[in-house]
Amino acid sequence: MPFIPLHDINPRILLQVPWITWGLIAACGLLYFHEVSLAPAESQRLVIGLGMIPASLLGSAELPPELTMVSPGVTLVTSLFLHGSIMHLVGNMLFLWVFGDNVEDAMGHGRFALFYVICGIAAGLVHAFSDPASPIPVVGASGAISGVLGAYLLLYPRAKVLIPIIIFPVYLPAALLLVIWFGFQALAVWAGAGADSGVAWWAHIGGFIVGAILVVPFRHKTIPLFGNDPPRGVRLTPRGTWGRKPAPPQKDERQGPWT
Image (cartoon, rainbow, N blue to C red; front, top):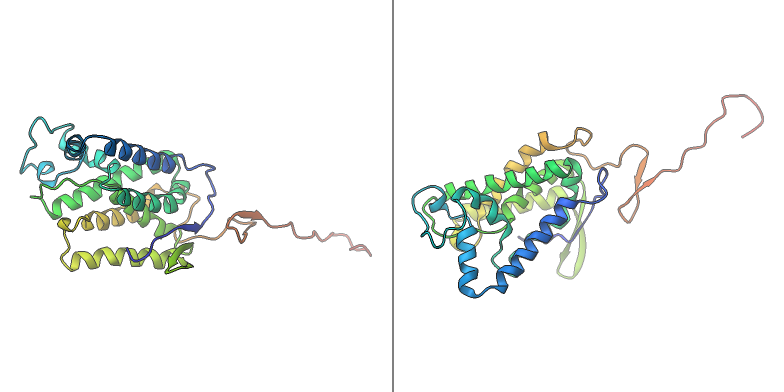
């Protein structure tokens, strides 16, 4: 990814606390630290047993019983909570932290949780069908988070996102940043990068597209697409919080010398 987002100026409107977004970040973090606390052989067994393996999922291969922990279909969900390295975890959780709360705000807690899982499952299936004979377990939340990015693009294209360029902080429109992100994934696929590169490129593309489609029915009816303007009667303060506009002076309907 050419740019790393650090923060967005896009205050929440409907929800005070994005419990699902924060819960997902906490769950992924706790599971990762559990994973690295295990002996290497046990950690590897966890990844193989809970990671999504295309060949196993699509029926062309089968894990030995001693490595099987859940059915292949269930790994489409369990794989979303495991990560291969601390940088893998931090990168994914940073994207979820920046973009997830506003998408959750637009959908509500329950719908966002369902949306996240559906995007993750769809991303896993796209990756599996792109390389059906692969015996490599896929882990990571990036497919589901890609769906969050697709939703964010349609909901808040004009939101400002902070990125570091060398040592300088720069705010870019979300639309520009996310289109560049998607183009980067597509370019990697076009260049022939596959799962052996360590990145599930097709999962990112599939999750992004599914998220952009599902945001239409999943968003709250009061949240428009392609918006980012404050609600009526509200202004955006420099710190990025909604502040009420002062009420305009009311003109007295009666005629007289008063002001």
